[in-house]
Length: 418
Ligand SMILES: *Cc1c(COP(=O)(O)O)cnc(C)c1O
Image (cartoon, rainbow, N blue to C red; front, side, top):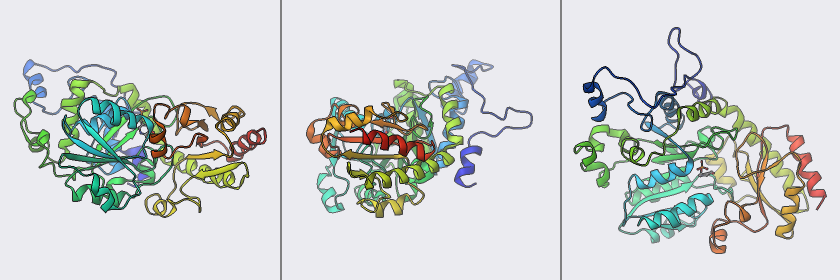
């Protein structure tokens, strides 16, 4: 199956006489014929016992996403933030260190710089455009992972995934990629060497601004021999060794049966059902988002009230070559731009919009705008803001799938008012 077909047919297949639509298993638990049958579940045999750990509806969606990304297994969780948190803490403990690109979603910066630090896990942020020998300088003996976004939110830079994979692997650590904006339709990081892929499914995957969610996908390719959490016995399962018991899918299996069991940040059956509805139309939506954003970016760049536009398909973009390599079919609907003059003029422009929604969200079917410096990145210091590539007057525009002429008209009318 090609990827568009996988969006519809992977994960769930109705047998003779069964429901064509994905059934919602709205149940916390599952009945078995004897305590002995239940005991087998606690020894991690097949089957579902309790929906905090696994659920048949959620499982179908996990299998669909694993197939879309080309991974061996996936785990749906309660949010993108949960996915990032679990991706790191599944293999790092207090006293460990990891490296993250400085061009990241603001919530991820807070998680890595403040909360994980409190747990004794240290993160060093690096400028992702540096050459490998420069990146190498931040490696420490206790470095255990490298983390980056393919299209960074909100500066819309494009990551050289192969360079980062080479950097991570030459140091014996996995590359964890946040692929939220491209989605597997536009880019499949595992094909370029990523070991773990995470998403905020809240964005394009669900796509309609109705359900928070996240997912972690395991490529099955990383050798965990130097990660004792996967290669030494887990006392909470009578000494089970994840890498031996689950083989290639050990990373995500451990995350499910140990971390999500203990922390409880699972996705619900209803949440997974909504996510699946979004995934069914993902390929057609992301194509339209990308086409509309390309037109809007080019029109904005020509307008003399605009200082700069960040969008990788623009001839002026420093990321054009990387986008052609990693995102040949489009760069999603998100772009950012700055209006000439002050922060106040940017705010005035946003107030004048009629069609585009002022919301704390992105990657929605409807066009929406946000002012990062006063919202998502408000908690960051000026230095961190510069590190993330954000200026005080910058606006993030998430181009929807409306008729592009209506989107352009809305922008031009509001620009003319300032
Ligand atoms: C929104 C977002 C997140 C966080 O996801 P939530 O689902 O809001 O928790 C992480 N990474 C990126 C790139 C995002 O845009």
